[in-house]
Image 1 (tube, rainbow, N blue to C red):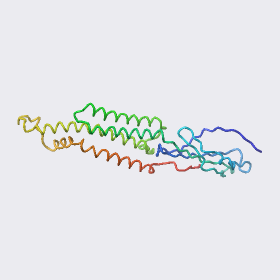
Image 2: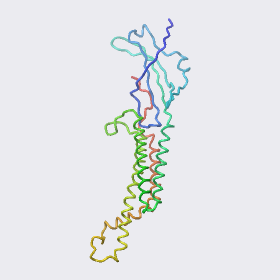
Image 3: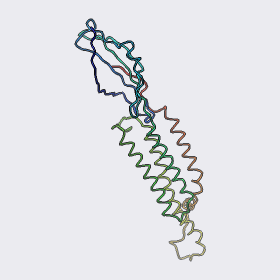
Length: 257
């Protein structure tokens, strides 16, 4: 008996893992069986040429292909039944999210240029640091909105690579904003220390001394230090985060029930 029917199936794949998002590869298992008929009555299997005829499919961000097809027989208390099982490999195209990564890197480079602006140019320094920080933060929120609801790492969920990268980049942008506040106050303190000998001895509120003063005077020199320390630190961060991508959790194979 040859029986052919068209079937459209909406599947759920609970084994998905987004640890390496957006460079993730997912595997989804399919099991087809009939509980009404036992193995002695019906044998379910894939046609020999059916799986080979299925070419890799592309839909939106995903490309799908069949990596395995097999038939299995399981025995229960009610008898033995046959099942046809297949494993789908779903590979994400990261092009859309690569743009988010590139934008984040460019914003860090833009915030880095602030170290070459004069400390007295407060509106330019603050606007540059603040806007780049908000734009990276907006980038993080945009990625979060496009992802399915997942438990956080604190609640037992997996660490997500892209979010870790964007959060790290956000911190670097925030550092430029914080650094300007330290430099600006440090320059004011250094000016008071330099002018101290010409100030009357009775002006105690102006006279500065001690280790706190030395710290603020050092902060006045942060721009010169950050011009070489900031790019080195960010390059090391990028190397470390990209090298750690394989260490994030992934869905490497189908897990059949």
